[in-house]
Image (tube, rainbow, N blue to C red; front, side, top):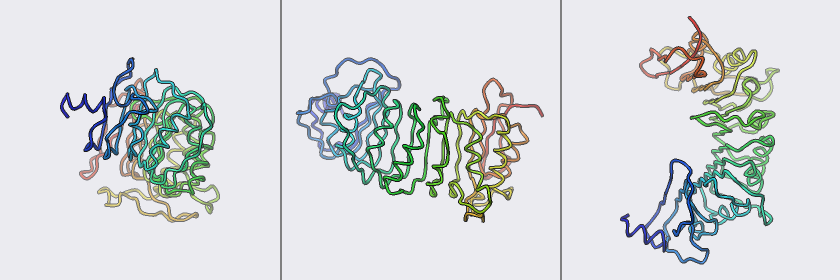
Length: 352
């Protein structure tokens, strides 16, 4: 789109063939009011019949802009620090696009709702990511997502978040959630206080289809214990189809490393072959609570000091292992598997 055409679109919203629109800034900055479509008045006439994807990151916009009433399928918003939207106006943006399939919202500052929140149902939404202010957890309480498959929470923890997640899953008639991410950031660790808002991992029992779990800033041992199988050997397994576990900034205490070894041993009881078979050791494991899939990917960032012997042992059980220690403890730069078919990478501290 040329400069003049973009200027025409940004001011008048005349782009009948436009399907995707994205304007992103790498970092937040201060912007005064912009005379462009995302900040247009509510009564502005627009011609965007084919627009289905909108992404605005660290750019100014107004919640009442007609741009947010184009029946989008994909919506990504990352607000400026100077944005102070009430919760009901954020919900208004969502409700204006009932056919959303993917939604990624991050608001640093949110005000309490001015008007009562009206519950909404997004029948087609399969991916939802919410990050930023703790009030966004209240937003979840008014949304029903019967097709949800991928859920990401990166919200400031003021209260335990598991109740919010459990209520969402129950209200949505237990959709087959395949991936869950809580306070996990692959770049830097977030420390949200009391175990990233997680007091108990019992809610994972309600996610039998979960295959990927990513967590950050939580206690190391309780999650591993929850994933280590039923205590009596005959109960229900937690996340029996889990094949990928990612942990970031989950500091181990005391017997954390031994709990990790126990979890790997019970989920991957037979060492994988040297050639790493095609299913990556991911076949079902007979268990008291039914068949359990083996872990295929285990990734730990700044969690525990494992040592090369523990890393090597885990690599004999799990297809891919990534372990990055704290920067001030790390002394070995890298380690690569001798396998030709799969490369596993591990960084650790300690002495041989």
